[in-house]
Image 1 (cartoon, each protein chain N blue to C red):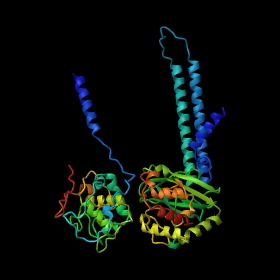
Image 2 (cartoon, one colour):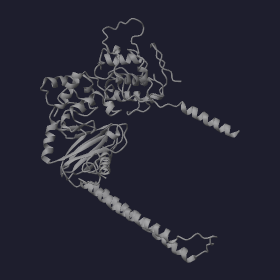
Image 3 (tube, rainbow over the protein chains, first blue to last red):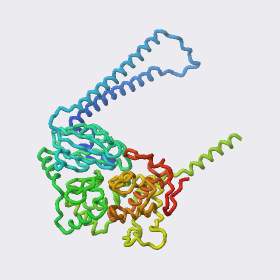
Length: 339
Length: 184
């Protein structure tokens, strides 16, 4: 008995590696997701009622018309009255079906309008650009030096509307954080906007919801909803240029970074590395995860990712970097110092 | 009698299907084997006619549509377009014509990328992995119509200033050593 229970628990944990509070459509943390959850339950109960009625009618009909085998079968006679009655029955059932579908349609439209409508005047604006296979996050500002650029981790203040501008660099991606709002496609060459507002502080997980190539399944992101003060502090921290390396190992690490393939794709503000092909690494150590929520941000995972990313995420745009062991240690130490 | 014909047709179809093969995408590159090509060339003087030996594995990239399209992506990402534009040239020489200053063989282009050339072309040695240089070399050759149509990318993300790469007429290079692969 106990063994069965633990087996079920283990298989559930396998199926749902994430805490449902972080990644579940029916654990709304934002008004938008609340509206979607409302529509879900209404639709669920309507369809449940339809299901019960259908099964009931089917059981009743089979019980009522059950007869012993008759030989030979009787010849059915035309019964005008019964035919008319059956005609009314079918017509009524059809009408109820059409009305039910219309009710669901109207509810969907109402939900759509509720999810879309924006009333606030002072939102936080975020630009999200999809890449194969990571998310570029910028907080645009008219002043270039006040623009925050990061990747895969979205910080937002709790209780403040957030307007998201979408775009894509290569193919169609879809932004989906189930606890927050519905899916939004990110189309290349076409900018659109939507908004959300998170009411409960926490870390929420999101996922690309449009098949976008080999590593679509490993294209995650997280939304960190925190108090307004914490958000301001984070933003001020992100605006700084990269911290200067202080130990001999991190100084060497920067040297390795700037003389190898790293600088062809990555930016570290405050150094010569300024390419925009891969994620901005100016404050990479401040993030919880690397490689689009695939690996924890630890020295071991970072080293494995730098040396052979194609083993972890086959097809990823990052090239393998056969570094000498000392160089690898140094560059990992340097990346870990970039808070 | 009819059965024999049907079975014969079926067997024939199976035999034809068996000859189909799916192109393999090389996601994990072979480890950097010999760096013979990646050594510094002190002088332009070389014994023999061939300036650069093309290693056998470069063919792997010339014959793979995936590698060529990766090369196309890298050509953009590493800002080759900054000087060579999309093949038409600008600050750097055009790459889709038949005038190759330093040779049109894959090995020549690879060496040009890795070593740099006078008057502007920077060296990318240690900046980009070897396999990516081979992919870029393959793509550059496709712009000049030196690759078979089957592997040349026929879609670009920019405005086309010329017919798609796969439909450019086959060029017969003038005064260039080495014969390009001829599509059958």
